[in-house]
Image (tube, rainbow, N blue to C red; front, side, top):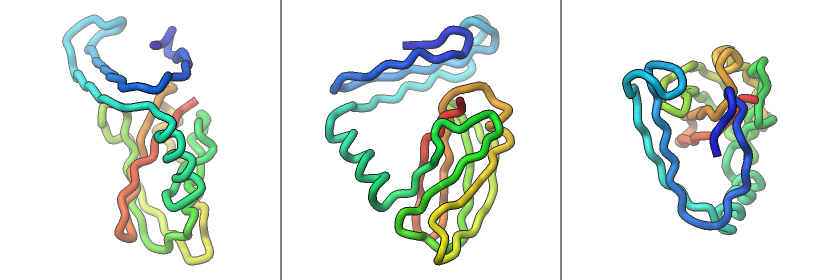
Length: 145
């Protein structure tokens, strides 16, 4: 696990509990002072896969294509509709806000098309779009290819 010059190594995780630690330094190659040290714990299981599949086929909105490309264009599908006004915030893995915006979904729409200008300028990696509106809050992971 890790990267080489910003190109991430891929891997399939076995079922189990994992801890991911990310440390941001003020200099390159882990030099300088520590700016942020974040640890998250997560579980991989067949139930996790089933939940992800259910979310895509069911109730929760999801992003596609994912990973997104350098132009920052992607869509959010609202499987059961979801008319109303929404706000969104895009953040990086350290929680820094990169972009905010608003959109409206009408009764006949299921897809919202967005272009994230700032994410397109960022390095490849994982970003998070938080969508708030219509009595819901959803955080969707997006990968910048």
